[in-house]
Amino acid sequence: MDKQLNPPQRILMGPGPSDVYPGVLRSMSTPLLGHLDPAFLTIMNDTMDLLRHVYQTENKLTIAMPGTGSAGMETVFVNLLEPGDKAVIGINGLFGTRMADIAERCGAEVIKVEADWGTIIPPEKIEAALNEHSNVKLVAVVHAETSTGVLQPLEELSEIIHNYGALFVCDMVTSIGGTPTEIDKHKVDAAYSGTQKCLSAPPGLAPVTFSEKAGEVINKRKTKVQSWYLDLTMIQDYWSGDRAYHHTAPISMVYSLYEALRSIKDEGLENVYSRHEQYGRALHSGLEAMGLKLLVKKEHRLNQLTSVIVPEGIDEAETRKLLLEQYGIEIGGGLGSLKGKIWRIGLMGYNAKMTNVNLVLSALEDVLRQQGYEVTGGAALKAASEAAAK
Ligand code: PLP
Image 1 (tube, rainbow, N blue to C red):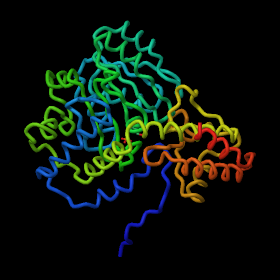
Image 2 (image 1 turned 135 degrees about the vertical axis):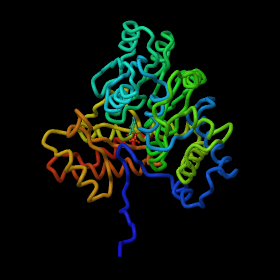
Image 3 (image 1 turned 45 degrees about the vertical axis):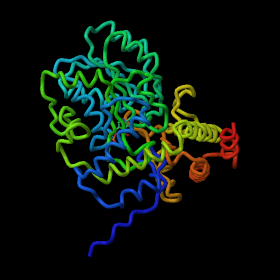
């Protein structure tokens, strides 16, 4: 007989998925509804309202696509781009690279604006690209680059992009629920995110939002969207208006998203952001007190995802293995050019709390000591609690 499923208990402090709110888990064990049941349609409407609240937008076209964050990324590009369109893509980490790949697959002419991993995309580089290339349809950047821990400032970029008449596209997979997204304030035309980071729900849905202008671009396309499954010209009629069947909504995932967004609204957006800020600051101080160096300059650092440079003589993968085996804590390693060089520690959503800061600092101190790294006992916890109290 096959054994009953019984996964081990972990503390998920990597780049996602993060631990989910207890209420989110409970919501997923509630009874299924038919996907056209009026009760489910009400839950879809409420989920759209909650998404608007958390994204900070009035955008009508704000829905949750089935699939993970990459499905959201693909949704934005396949719907906005047609063959021959020009797209400027900022690349300062793995997810910028992925955006460029998808835009190329849409048949777009991709103009890459690159910056070192661990730094922001300088707005003047985007301006130079817009100066050099006429009729650019969209400019895309990653708001919170999970592969490095960089927060991209949006304000100046938005002004530049709109001056050139292009659409402003943002990857908000790791920022939603952890950093103010302020879609309307920054005039972001299209954004996508995922459920498994600071929203603290399981992976499986990709909330997307489109401005009126972006919606018009989609509805006036000359060619069909090349992906049937992600075609918003049809899906928008399922989430509102006619409620026309397109695909069967992942019912339990929609419950989980509703409950996660409701928890965030209940705590208050400002409180949620300041909680991430407070404990992110505590973690940064604790790591530095341990003598470790952080990859990203203070002013561009994310609170919810911290990249730590692996010290000389320490085995990056062995450290993660010891944390998992001895403490049940998962942290992430580096990707692409940062593979083997950094650890990535997440304090996302429900997980952004002082007990987790203390836990990961103590555990890291111990497994580094086991590998011969000299640490002044207790310095990290003292620095973290002082920083949290500021
Ligand atoms: N964009 C960013 C910034 C991400 O961090 C991720 C996932 O880590 C993605 C896109 C892709 O999301 P997923 O892995 O859920 O498909």
